[in-house]
Amino acid sequence: MNIENSRDYYGQVLQGSADLKTDACCTLEAPAPEILAALANVHPEVKARYYGCGLIAPEAAKGMRILDLGSGSGQDAYLLAQLAGAEGSVVGVDTTPEQLAVARAHLDWHAERFGYANVEFVEGDIEKLDALGLEPGSFDLIVSNCVINLVGDKAKVFREAQALLKPGGEFYFSDVYSERRVPQALLADPVLHGECLSGALYWGDFDRLAKDAGFLDPRLVTDRPLGIGDPEVAEKVDGIRFFSATYRLFKLDGLEPRCEDYGQAVRYKGTVTGHERALTLDGHHIIEKGRMFAVCGNTWRMLAETRFAEHFEFFGDFSTHYGIFPGCGELMPFNAETGDAAISGCC
View 1 (cartoon, rainbow, N blue to C red):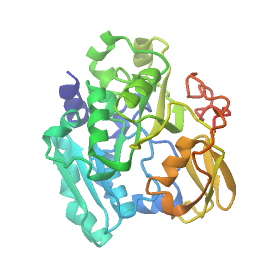
View 2 (spheres, helix red, strand yellow; view 1 turned 180 degrees about the vertical axis):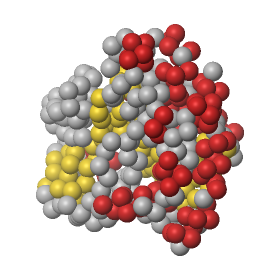
View 3 (cartoon, rainbow, N blue to C red; view 1 turned 180 degrees about the horizontal axis):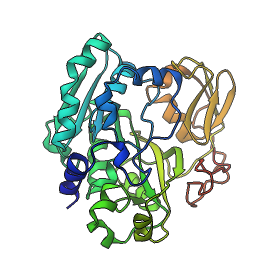
């Protein structure tokens, strides 16, 4: 029922973000000034039918070829189109005809607004990306915003996303996660499914699925606890805590299961537009311009072997191993009190 309920809930039941019963499909992060400026260039009807749970604006996206899984009415696609610029492009994939109709209706409006046309929308199921004729290894970035929880075969989505990325490419996405496994019986509830709760991944299962797909070191960027304001919905989930979280997954050979110390460091040049003072790789790595920053081997590769390489100086190599960074443990990564990334000594 997953795909049918998603089409019905987002195409017929919901007519706008005000109809939601929880804040799961709402973005509460305060956008940076350049993102606010880009959002101002998105058509009002597109924004009115937006149901994302995170801010999908990966850094250094200029010139990138980007795939948006579950693109909906097109807000993220049109935002990313501006970040990618005329040299880049965005392909949005969605399965809901009503949402696609809104996105496609304003293609010309946005092309005129931007001064270039670099967006297209494809109707399709993100569980069947292999059926859409997309070339393997052809995307620099893949994004998704509060959609993977809606699909049944999440492992297949991760595997096929990994196959579509270029080496060094990145899957950057927001979704809903749970502190423990949600009972299977709740999947049959159309409201809980449509509100992104019953299909939420237990964070431990997500970690396993991502690694099984070849994304060997998932990095948590931001997270927050979800508010469930509807008493009936809250009663049905019976005290399970849910979180909205943004992760980045890199397609890189050689990543290790733990944060291993090789005595390496990086120094940020401050050259990523909109992030001149500091670049946030994830919740543990806020790298200030000009400051020598010690990193593990995995972080070194995430910067040296991706689109970020030109923005950093690199020090050290893999010739000497000093052991594991302390605090690289197995506890739940989310902070249940504040929603901030949990603090540890990892990296």
